[in-house]
Image (cartoon, rainbow, N blue to C red; front, side):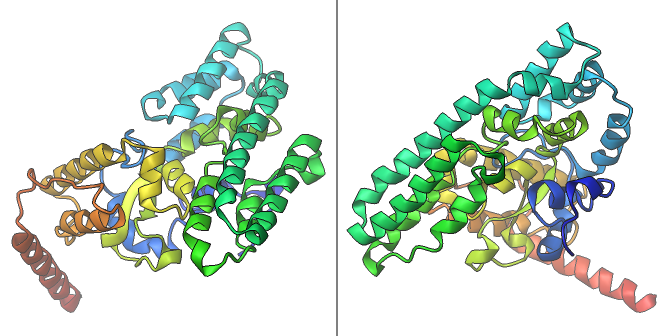
Length: 351
């Protein structure tokens, strides 16, 4: 299935919204994580906010279609303010201030008013990361370092030229790093450099990047983006590209933005970027346990034990969650799973 052009996008649904905004599949390789999507009132283990369930999307879209001006947009987004991510909250504050002075105006005009200033700041943010990449390149062999400097120099030229037909693309730069084959003894430092490059600003991590990206979009799309970043998404703890299994024991329910921004970054590196992740993970698992005690996640009672082990392995011991609140021992949880599977098999035999 090819991705339609922006002018031919279908109606945004729970099934396709991540595909169009984050390139994260809703099903496919994460279909085993469906039980996690049914959990209620879950804290994102990456961002520490309450995840907006995907089922809320339909109501949001219906209300968004009725919004005609900035005041309408602010009123709608205000209902979800507590679940908005930091960058999204910053943008909401900007929209709110704008609507107070221009209640009948369009959010798109707000973004265009501050575009030039935000573009300048965004370039500086990009340069800061590229500078750090160049500094790290000093640890590489001269031949490998030169190849890398060629990539970063080209990026700087694109950023300074600011031509719409040749604008800086974060994804393109990250992909270009895979074209460099480092020597065997410098693979570790080169991987560190690639992880550093992941910190290039995105619309989810930088207010300036958000303004630049959405200043040419309609207000409905900008408003939708603030909402969608906080909706639920299934995340591989060990990335699929690195051999991670497509099983619930390797899945977390996170916000779409938290999932997207990690990409294939090792969890240890992601924790450096977001030091509160270990504490957020504990809140997450406590929320999962509460759901299980209330009758949720039937047939997956061993999930807390599986994800605890997986997180400890992937984080090199940085994440050590407690299951002290869980009513099942590991043996009892396994027995509960067997009983559920037995009942399910008997039910299938009857029908």
